[in-house]
Image (cartoon, rainbow, N blue to C red; front, side, top):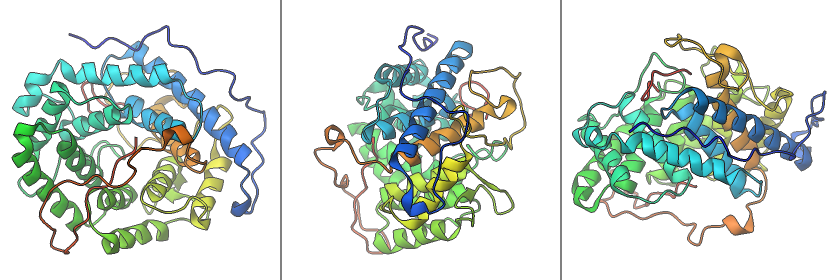
Length: 381
């Protein structure tokens, strides 16, 4: 069964914002960023993300993290912070993702036949979790795939030829380790616990090689119970890599961009840094100043094209697929500066506690709650 494309009759998120011909007025003092300007930027970003998501689904029928998971992160974060989103689109993205993996359940159980391997599957589980999808046979098979494909030393698959989206070992390890434990079946729990311990130990020993590694290492330490001391040190490394312009760059010799900046900011607030912190506000100012009039952010691709080019409806031509990722991170980071909506406060907002032996640092912390390529086709970002 081929997964159905996103429903063409989905209502379009309209009337939320009018983009002016000039850039929004941003104060030079980051402490004085106008919430109305941030709101306008988020709403504009959501509109262009919706256009790219729907346009992609008209051309392709396979799951990808650039047009499913990361736009869903932007939507879920915006909703959490009181923004109106297209709820039907979020649900349809989750259905589309689930069907993409549902038809491959037998391959997942064998640990074979999935392009992008554990990176694809982990991003798929993240997408489903963002939409609060209920666990079932398909998600259990996806978790089983992660257990079966983990390397003996605890590492998970990456693809160095597809930066920045697929080449971070820290991102792969963080997502795969967290989600294999969260979605493993009862029968797979012993193997899941062993895999989690291997994944944690590998991740906590890993030496970052790129900014995404630093960001994801911080996130992983928060999610996987590294303890306050290790997490604090990881946070300081992310903060220390902020540029004079307020942004972050993917690599030391690359300029700041929305992908690295949005990801760093979202991760910082997700792991406890107040969005009122001066470093966060400088990042917000950078994003506001670099947003395009159509609501997007341009991020230049570093990957060699391996598919025939097509237009998804998202701007920036050959850079469209990594730009939709950067735009998603930027929208999520900006949306997080607004108060949490009262109806989105979880009943239990504390960490999820999973039984496990203490790690070698002596930490007894549990796993923190996660808020709410080449993949099946060849990658495009």
